[in-house]
Length: 313
Ligand code: UDP
Ligand code: MG
Image (tube, rainbow, N blue to C red; front, top):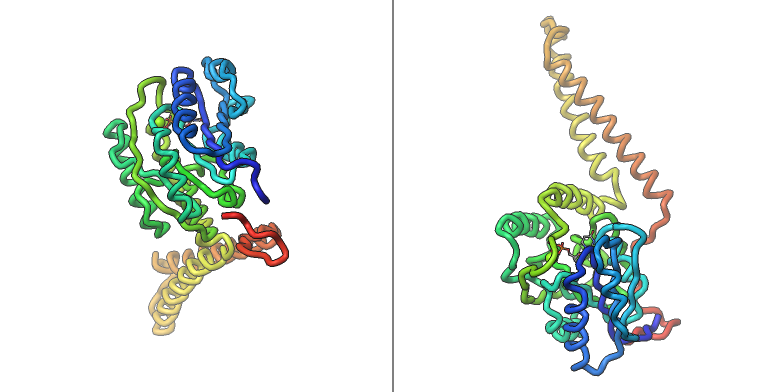
């Protein structure tokens, strides 16, 4: 589908009343140097301060404000922005002035070569505790997903529009957009971005996000690797357990044949337990197969179709 504008900037904001006007001004200054058609979309994620009122004072046809009924979270705000954006290129950034709009042209330059470009807060201006856990999180995600970027959770990112049309960002999966994009086969570039300290307002994410982030990492790894074949993971564990249980029972059976009593041996319990759990795992895998098969979710993307006009990238 051809897009009406060259660029859409999407900014999720939740209680950022001191930041929004300044951010809007900085973005406008940065983009006005480029001769582009553009829109700036602020998604007010249910702010309870004056964020919405501040945004409403701006009179600019490039500005679009969407206000959520309540606070649904950053992923929902981004997902809504992706749906509404009319730009051929899309840039997302945080609304707290930590990302510098001067870098918008650099993202656009890099989007000539990649489907998606992710920012890397090279010298992060956040508290030490946040940086520490963030480093662990990034390393772990790198190892588990095989994607070689340093900063998965940076809010400053650029996309070609077709990327965001083909990924489904929900719950708190905004942290894993590069994983979802990589999974679909899109190329990902990374650029170092300047990170400024938060001057006004508070960070919305505390220590509780670490646990949630790690649980989501398990989900995403599982979804990416085994969504289409649940029996492969549950089935292999099930077979391993069943096999171990059978070996144990065979050994005990041999002892029983030689006249040794086995009725009181804890090993017998273990053997039987392994077999029962193993059968359960295999059944779980089969139920998983049933679920994935009833849901008709095609996971392929057609890059070229001779019967349709070519995409203008
Ligand atoms: N945000 C949002 N909804 C939320 C939480 C955060 O739209 O429920 C926005 C927030 O206003 C900011 C961006 O997401 O523009 C990043 O949030 P924050 O700066 O608090 O995260 P951090 O930089 O501390 O990771
Ligand atoms: Mg921030």
